[in-house]
Image (cartoon, rainbow, N blue to C red):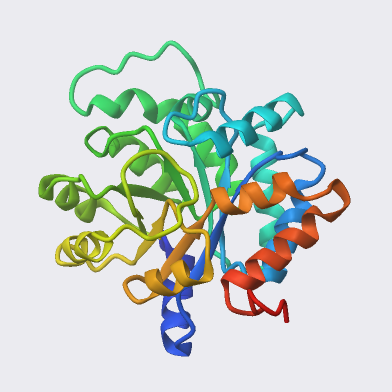
Length: 292
């Protein structure tokens, strides 16, 4: 049995040694715009400089996501995307990049649908009711070689059972923190986190922004004072300058809505090329002004 979170730690350590951070973890909505295209978009993102991925599991009511991702999920669901579409994307990424950290991101309802229904939570951990159905998710995710799972709407104080079930399959439960998170919540996440902690650069839903939040550095400092777990910043990142600003604070940046919008606006026969080019720009492999 390997150690939970080992690919995350190895990737962060290797990047620190090379001095080429931050790592870029793009978000791809599985099945958008069609399940058949997702593998090509994964490969294009790797060519463009992706160091790992968040693969989003389509859901009809993604409350933390803005219009870009809501629309992408609706299109993906209409095209027949499922959890298996997301796991197939993970398999493609793993075959192409064996050491890349791969994270599955989604909401509790689709993940619970993997297992038995009609559960009795009982006493103790309020999240104990999710343990049994998430065993099925953990098993399937482990078979696809997933490194971590983000359950967007699972509170930290209800996450013990989920974390334990995933850990039994060598999978990290990745926690989210927002600028509004209290010290108590930060401490709770710090005690339980493995892999990395996802810091939301701002409050609200996902979506590209023109500027990084001015109070981000203070937020990052609050979290760093309470944990040694690597941090990644997402929400609102869309440009090379944003990646550089984030890289001065943390070892990884997550880019989502801007990439999804790039896919949505590209012609059908140019989507993979658009993904590759966009990520080349935000990773600094290609000039944003000259295109070279």
